[in-house]
Length: 312
Image 1 (cartoon, helix red, strand yellow):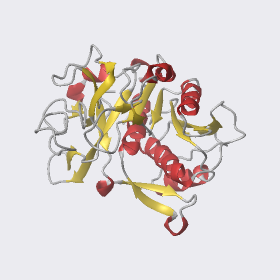
Image 2 (cartoon, rainbow, N blue to C red):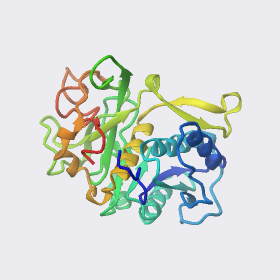
Image 3 (cartoon, helix red, strand yellow):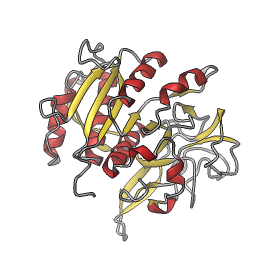
Image 4 (cartoon, rainbow, N blue to C red):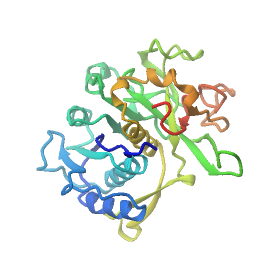
């Protein structure tokens, strides 16, 4: 880890609706793990609506509230000294999330994480402009439903699509065994042409994913959330590529090179600096790399998972 822990870097998160408890819950998470305070008062944390204003905030939503807590906690875990900007869209509509994306990219962030996705659709090219921000890394979850057609916005050529792994402690040199998570989204785009820097053989269009991190809820991540969860309020275990996307955004913040990630091309020239994830499957494709963790590039885990910040 760099000595500065990501100091001077900002990671932005786009979600829908409001979690009114997020700042207090973030404080509990960071205190538990010995991380420095990240508050509005000390300038580390900022929550705004899709227009970039502190008020009015959207209506509260406990379901999205869990996502919001997961996102801020995962950025914190990866980049303890990064500032965090949470942009809350009025609703989960494409138009409102797109407006929030533009606000997040204009916030001074080096990376923006999006833990949501939808089926690709006719007309999505008109919405793609919200995810094109040169000099800012834009990341999106690959999905949690295994091998299927690629999802938007992860399938866009300017977006770093983040897949998922299962991470288990092991008695080996690394101390961990990592395989493709059964739910990690992977697949071929039906709409987005293959970028010049992506060379896998069996998908003529854009392939998802590019990179990955732990996402399996069975080997999941501790999250602190008290909003609307009743008896479950407090510490919960959460997984999904909704966890891996903000974690990778935090790694980019930690490395401090967000300006080189206007797309995922830089990762493809630094694959040797990632952990190559071998084993596991997220569906049936005859053992092909599109649904199986194989040596080298595979779609569920992309080029691999972070081995420090060498690839970033």
